[in-house]
Image 1 (cartoon, rainbow, N blue to C red):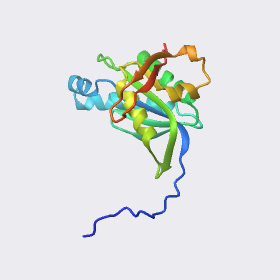
Image 2: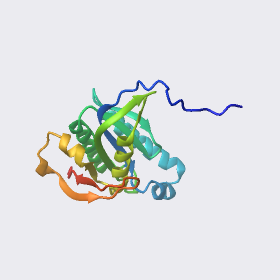
Image 3: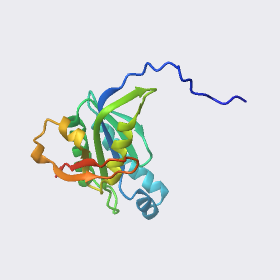
Image 4: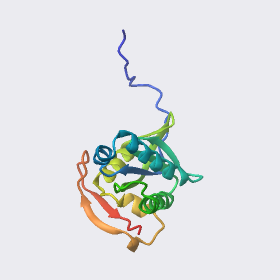
Length: 179
């Protein structure tokens, strides 16, 4: 058996490209699954998946499903914000069970590598960490995402510099009040 190796002089032709990265995650998914049971929780997540896929755009796509969440990619931050807002509103309007379902959304704008149908790079990790910082019902963005948006900067609430796991320097985080 041979051990795979990473060649120092390997083919590194992968070109990074700027994308708006959106994570959508179910807040309290383990609690919800315990309350509903596995089968009903599965159907609740299927409802969420259908909601997320319906809001895809020409430049936005679901990159992968993460069980209780989704990784999406868009050309612009404003498309990612529109998608996150639609998803939040639809979940709030159509909660299909007696257990409250809330999602949390995190957006970052930065360079990623797109390969093998997936996204790779520090920007993906940053978007994930911002999502984990959000509470159910919130849409949070990094400063880079807010700066890349064409929306009025006053429409965002500044949370200030925030330490996120895995990042040595604080990241400026904003909330987009979608309601």
